[in-house]
Length: 370
Image (cartoon, rainbow, N blue to C red; front, side, top):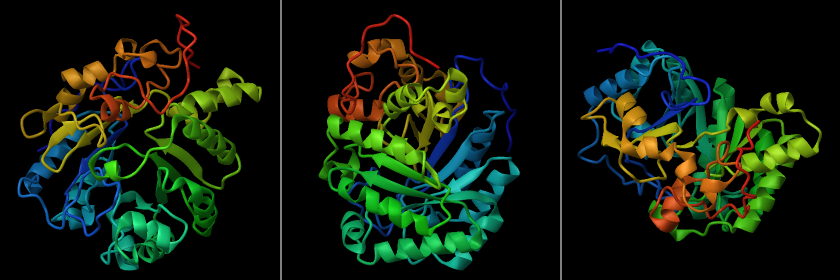
């Protein structure tokens, strides 16, 4: 079932034009939770048009056919633990040489035995969501009583099983006040990474409120300062303007261009919706990200590499010089590019400006890239 692998690493300057870094596969929309910010508007049972097991294996062939470097696969949902024949799917991905991570829901399905089984199956890492530092605030977002305690137990089980752990935290007006307390709470675990997801108003997320651009700017400056002392990596999602803030702070601290390139922030330069990231829905529809609901094709009809490399949506989204408004003329557009998902959520145009960024470009003809 494996197809011929395509050419290797893309040319310098066009780093993600051929191969994404991450492929997110929404394995199912079935989920026991009803989270207020869920972009998928998940449901209790699987959708009748969900990719079959055989179609899922063909999707994995398509991921492998990108060639080296093979993208990292993230199994998401819904709750991927509700996916039929999940462990057979993981085994096939590993056979193809695909690294696999998983983002399960905080459900009764989680246990120490499951963590050990996932580890032994070859799962690279597991991500759990924690949106508040106490049960009252977290459960209010997840809308299931007891979800906080399930998450805390699952994090301990992951540590006990030796499964690398990432914690995802939603950032919105409703959660921002507890971020410092969440950070302190995370010191209880041998955490690999804390990922802060800036709210995009899609799906059920329309019920919540995004931070203002000014509040976001202050928050990201705090994140940068915190990242220098945290015992784990901190990253942001749907906030590419963090790279502008981090780069300028590093330059102010006297770091050379070579030193900046050695940082984890630099390794994320340029990655955004559709450029380094691709999302495949439970029905095989292909999107630039899970937060940007613009269909570029279907894995039921076209190979994923063909859609990613050649479809109009993906090729347009990588033309940063053709973005509209200030994002199109910004000297940071190559390393940042703005959140295409947020631009689309606010304007219906994924080429528009990201309203989360208050920066006003200085109209330099060159790009400020390190």
